[in-house]
Structures are given as structure tokens and as C-alpha cells.
Length: 144
Image (cartoon, rainbow, N blue to C red; front, side):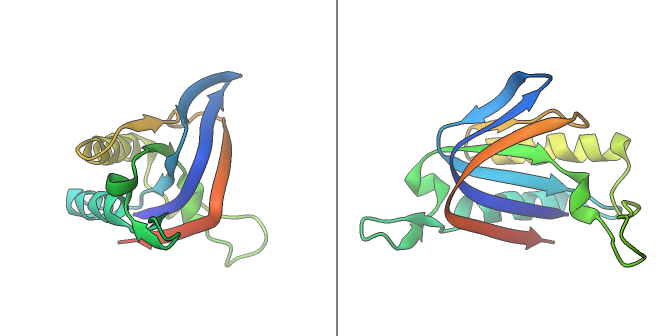
């Protein structure tokens, strides 16, 4: 399981020119799954994400989590996090979990995050347009 986290101001996801998920401030989480991922990994990474101290405190130091700072999470499924470019210029996505299983894991991941914060989502498997105001910029790669 891989998650790319970005601290954000405004962020949204559009599908067919309609906004399907939107936040004013918080985190954008791009998430991908591979064979062998487990519910324990989902629980671990969800808890890790909400406790990451990447928001500024009163002195401007990144010392607050989203739980302290406030905000929402915009979760976007992204199988391309498992792109493999070792054999040429065209990525292979064979390491990504198949759609049938991945959608189930994606829903579990979002449900786990919702135990802590409000979660907006993209649309699994859709051609999405994601707009992000990345603050900092702050981008964190998590893998388990």
C-alpha cells in the first residue's frame, strides 16, 4: 500500500466536469494498493496520516496534525503509484491490485480515515481532474 500525502489549501476532484469531492484545507491522499496488502496496513497508514505533524503551530513550526489543526482529507485512488518503468519508457501497472479488490480496499481505507476526520473522495476508476493548492509545498510518501 502506498499513499502520497499533500498538505493542501483548496483541493477538488472533477469527473465529467462535475465536482465529486472538495475540501477547503487539510490533506490530499493519493492511495494505491498492491497484492498482499492487508486491513492492518490500512489501519496503520490511516492512523499515521491523521497523526502526521505537518501543519504549522502558533510559531509556524510544522508541529500539528490534522486532528489538532482541523481540516478534511480528500482521498483519491491512484493505481499509477505502482507504475514500474524498469523495462523501457512505457510504465507497467502489473504490481497494482486488480480493480475488484482495490475498490474494496479503497473503501476500507476511507472508512478508517473517517473514524478520525471528514473525508471527501474522488471516484474510483474514473478519469479524474484533481486540483490542489499544495501548501509548503509539503508532500510525504508513505508505504507499508
